[in-house]
Image 1 (cartoon, rainbow, N blue to C red):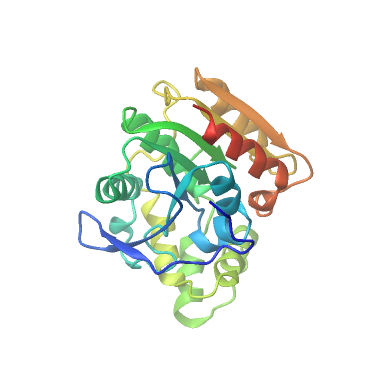
Image 2 (cartoon, rainbow, N blue to C red):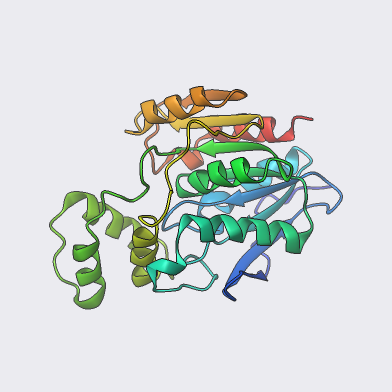
Length: 263
């Protein structure tokens, strides 16, 4: 099959979450090929993380099918504004709903940042349904926990000045992708503080997992520690990359695609 030089975005196919939210998904490639489920990071989208960076094209070249997802609160998926609708359990349930609806069981998983954190939990919870995973830029600790929710909410409501530097960086990240809904992203940041969103090092995924993090990413050592906790985990350091530009790194793309294509 000829691989187009430019990957086009197909029209979304919507999957219903357990609460009735519409989750946008996108499919490329031969339906008979092994399928990679690609899950983006916070304030990003399937287009931003996986299409514009060349990942979809690389995976198709490896003979794989790709099903991408806009996580709830992102892209063309519905954007709830209540933190209770944006918990880690809800995000993992969305993954299972996509697997069920597209009938792609077993699937191979590709996640970055928040998508990698969701992938850790999904792989641990669904060992028979996710057969291997690439988890890029996976942060340790409670995701988005350093964001000042009060300042973020006030900025979203009235444009009030954000003085906290971490929160200011997240706001800038959220505004970078067209169509982002800041209120929905703030709700998601709040939702990550409910329940047990931290990786359980005592009950890690048992599938083959490739961890990859940029050498300039402040979560580098935390990512190494998580990789060491997985019995079948391997780690790749992406030279010269920080958290926000690692998805576009050729070294990450090639290593991840080859790992996902392995039998």
